[in-house]
Image (tube, rainbow, N blue to C red; front, side):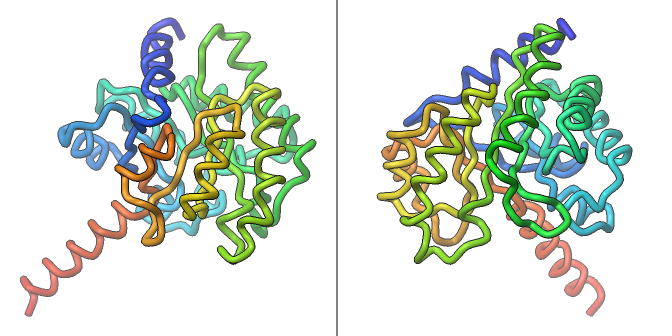
Length: 254
């Protein structure tokens, strides 16, 4: 794993509050090479896009072996650090999550997203349960002496009405602190878009904050001013490219 350590360290260093790392999420080796050529500092997969590109629905419906094979091809195609969206960790218990993380490392990843919802229905796990899963992942990374970046994602905001987000902030902050204590490296809050709430989350989270781009999120400049450290584009690049492909096909076939 020694060849991954410099990339992992480089990836950690890219998370600077106020100068966010922008991740234009890829889904296969070809898209990863295009994103790298576009000037990316790192490559991140998005589970929704990877699943859709392979004919599956999101939510760990894509076989893990296929996800790992895809990751391995991406890591071989680019020289940049590569982080994988592991969804909920592809495992029913902490030991299984640790195995999933180990296998992702063996395929070339230096980081992952690890979300705190159940893949079968999207409901939130108890924080204590997620803490054990993050802790198991960190333990396997520590055993390899690899500074693997665990981006702990909470789905508190993504599946809730934005009008309720202010009332969810205290729980999100508590989860950020618990996940940090368990060994997480970053805190991902997809769905959170209100500038005032983002500012409070930045101020009270012990981890660098990751925001996902949506129609309602502030501009990149505004997010930098708020102290965000990482901005992900999620499924948007895939959706944009598929729309462009559809339009090109329609023009060619009309």
